[in-house]
Length: 116
Image (cartoon, rainbow, N blue to C red; front, side, top):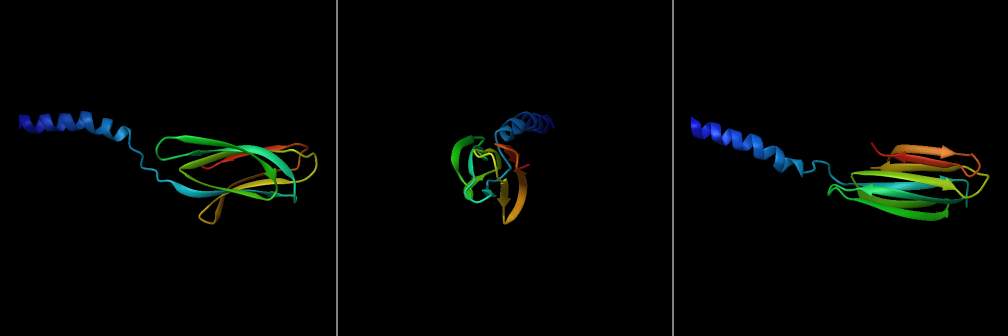
């Protein structure tokens, strides 16, 4: 009986510590699409969070349309128009479905969005 209690105490103390470093979230494939008014200029950045606990950020500049493919557990991004006129629309897609979307027509306006 003492041996069983000792094993249970050891498991109760060690198991939570062992699992604390584990991640049960798997990486997924995402597409960040920047669309809207044809040839609209933009600048922005996105951050990809991985199942290994890392965050990788990248700054981008370009014109509509553009697409960035990433793999991770979550994604956040921010984009801003470099032009006064036009529509900037940004979507995050996973498995063919739009899971986050934001747009602006404001002069030099910006959007930010993230996965949950």
